[in-house]
Length: 223
Image (cartoon, rainbow, N blue to C red):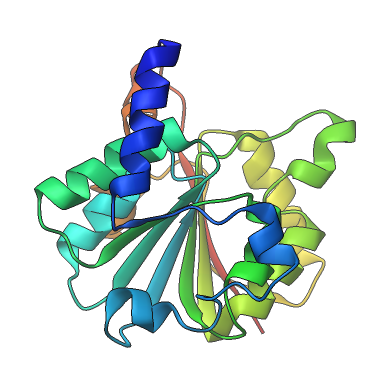
């Protein structure tokens, strides 16, 4: 994507009512105004579902289309990617969708305790190298942050093409105080996978499937 295209999209994001782009200082130096108050953004108190690293928002959008009784927030740091999801939501008049441009490590400064009902992590970078462990979205540090914002009994979904990420996360969860509700190392070749896992496929997921890569899935919650 050319720099002119990116700048155009960044400018449009500023005008989209469904995009929130707080600065780092807004989040850390002041109390972020929507923390604990996301119901004001949606003008209702419906349950909130959060997708981390949402990219173009394909998963966020499809979940929102399927269930108008929940509010969906796609979170990513890449504004040019968010633009596509935000624009589609506006064009389809999806009022239960918002997009948040920020770093995921700030998540517990963006949402209040127990404010989120469910989290989706879809096809994250597995950060295979040991020195990149701190950026892995299911490491212990991130899990603690998710626990802080999830309501009691709130669930986390990890869908990935990375067998490494799947195995790493399962091993971590089994050694800690988490309840694994469902785990599958190849969702399209085994029965019993949830509909929203099988029926929603992103652009990159389709590419992985064409290459014959298995898609893995884990659903878990804190005990």
